[in-house]
Amino acid sequence: MMNTSDEIKQMVKEKYDEIARQSKEQNQSGCCGATGSCATGVTVMAETYEGLSGYVTEADLGLGCGLPTEYAQIKAGDTVLDLGSGAGNDCFVARSIVGDTGKVIGVDMTEAMITAARRNAQNLGFTNVEFRLGEIEDLPLAANRVDVVVSNCVLNLVPDKAQAFRETYRVLKPGGHFSISDVVLEGSLPEGLQAAAEMYAGCVSGAIQKDEYLDIIKRTGFVNVQVQKQRLITLPDDILSNYLNEEELAAFKADGTGIYSVTVYGEKPDVSCCTPGTGCC
Ligand SMILES: C[S@@+](CC[C@H](N)C(=O)[O-])C[C@H]1O[C@@H](n2cnc3c(N)ncnc32)[C@H](O)[C@@H]1O
Image (cartoon, rainbow, N blue to C red; front, top):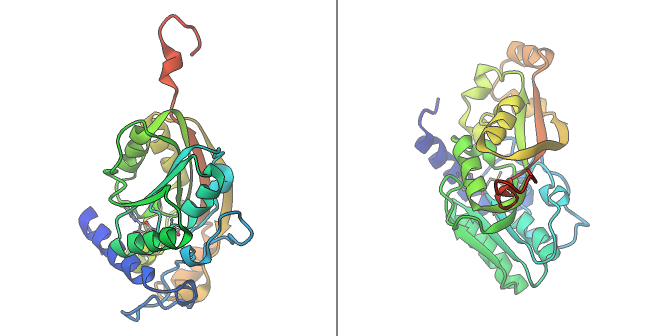
């Protein structure tokens, strides 16, 4: 059982370092890399990007659980930040919307992901897509710089989700917003799944209750918080049976615990319209 945030983050880094060096097909095979460890649950949640403007196959490692750029109301000229950008999948889709006059910044704590993403950007010849090595809990960006934040299947991996949303709030411009796809739960995971480090890296064990997730966002100060999309995720029995015996598996299926992919929206209030006396807020 993992204990500290640092241990969890180290394990997540190691897992995604391994994944960054593999193709989408290798990740989908269910055996996640050099350690020979199997069935992390990564990739079983991904949605198809094919056909989306800006989609780059090399950047798609099959690690997402939604299509946040489809819901993020990004406009030409915007500055977009992608939290946990991986090999750049959502950044390149965002780049096709912001165009030459906008900017896209991806932040990821795994060096091999940043290397892969930078290589992809270089091959595409983009000068306004930048990848920065750093942690979401301490973003390498100044305050009030970003129009739109997106993220795809990442914040469930962050032990301090409240800090992740505080940082999101800090870097957004007043009136800016986010659309974040993530994994949340309704009901509690059985102990066998909670304790599994691999299921953590596979975006399941680190997921929290949907209500708690939305509360954290509202407590941060975001307004107009909405769930833009919700989809039930069914993990295959051959993955679950690595962590649960037959009896536990049957109980898990019967107790109504749901693992969901959600895309959540929130806005940072535009304080400039809240000048006392203007009456607009
Ligand atoms: C499931 S992958 C998703 C990658 C990408 N968003 C995609 O859809 O292809 C999670 C990514 O988040 C990064 N990550 C996890 N925790 C992080 C943290 N605290 N700070 C920065 N990056 C983090 C990992 O390194 C990994 O690249």
